[in-house]
Image (tube, rainbow, N blue to C red; front, side, top):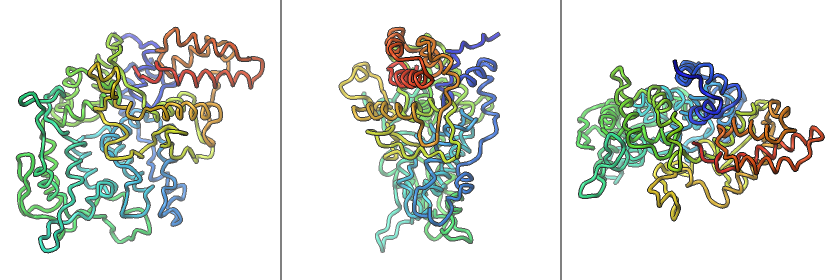
Length: 511
């Protein structure tokens, strides 16, 4: 019989598998066990869409046509309050692999709706099939806008027009196979000591020919309403290249319709041996650890290639396997080469989830938190480029991480400005909330007069009990100098303890 997880072990699991731990969620993990909790999350009904919330709040009014009004609110609302917390975590991870950013949604009005439609699409496939996801994003209006292949035309020698190569490049480089040939365990294949490239310029050109002819499906409507951004793009046959197209050593036959040519091209890409280790490793990095062992990657890639029922790309099976893997669950793996820096968004959401932060007006007016000097330095679907907020292979220069031969992706967001900006932002959020997004510290108030109990409770829920005794002692010592004579004084002790825990290195690095 599998032993019941301790509260600390459950909190550690939730740091990997959810948008944030709370006492209630910790209890659920303890009651159900790790696998049972995952199964319950996989079976949970999907919470309402961002698109429908925008409509319900009237953001489809023509006054919002050329703005981003409503998007940040609908994104934060789901991340903080949706009960399908594993689905939200996987959706966020997918949004940082198959990147679209709201500021790059050009060529049409209603950017908020386009961005919401894209996140809703990723959520649709979060527990689905990766090949189906590639098909959906390859015909999605937001991706067509962001990577500029919406309106893509075939070559025209008389005008000099050439197919746009933007999506062809990123589909291979970022969304499926990567730049170098991989072994099944995610390590690079070498030729004469150097990595072997997966594709070249001719492959990009060949694939770009396939991706011609796609445009918005306007139906009988105009862009006076945003509905076209939620529909898959449609083909304009006269713009589509019908000649044969060769890439990755295979050929899409001549004479196919645009839809059939796209299907054939995606099948070619999906058959590539890189897909399983390339995507599996990134999902491990997003959820568990920045430097998974080759054996860990190989185990998860094997599940990606075959979920036990002969299906390739079953994301539900992949996510369950990577969260239950010994390298995710066993404490013996924890050490200086393990874990990951928590993304600023996840730190903020983790605090909000832990203490039931809610917006009484349902406005969720958190806004764009991209400013590193005064906010989080990161905000949902606001990556500065298609390469995400950070690269999976990023190595901080001249660092101990570099000397150890490790990667630390999230450190690409980290500098002197962002470190100070994050602490200042969280100090304000902890004590005042953000707009009317306010926390409930009811579980902490009874402990606030006792510095040790207060810090221990916050350490458990937010940091899975991983703060060192020295760090706990320093925080407790600071708290013990503060008055505990009034309700206001007790709240000040809570604010100080939360801020110091969330600034502690052992919290910032998720292990």
